[in-house]
Image 1: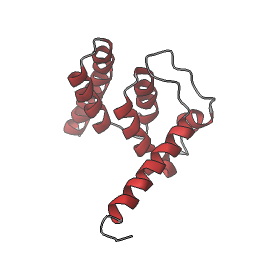
Image 2: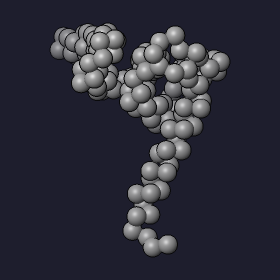
Image 3: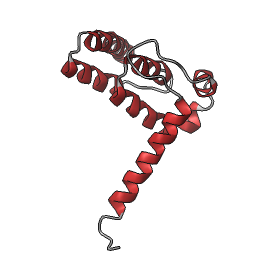
Length: 131
């Protein structure tokens, strides 16, 4: 029990710190550190934290992390659609980003991500076929 609780707190500190460090890395244009923070954030995404991390990634213009989370949204749509913060993210009007990132419309972004994934799957399965 103690180990599980300790592991949870370590995870919480790492995830929170990576998010703050991502902001600093973006501000100081430290691309390597930014990418490392995006990877750490992507490994710590849960259904409870994904909306907040997504908003933060979009605000910062962290497109790799945002794209990863969009894939997470698609994979976990059945669970997420029951959560109030995810429903609010979907149904709110498109957001004009006050940060360096572009404005975003979540439904449009999810549609684009799904289309890219379908195209990628189609291309990988059709490489061996002759047309």
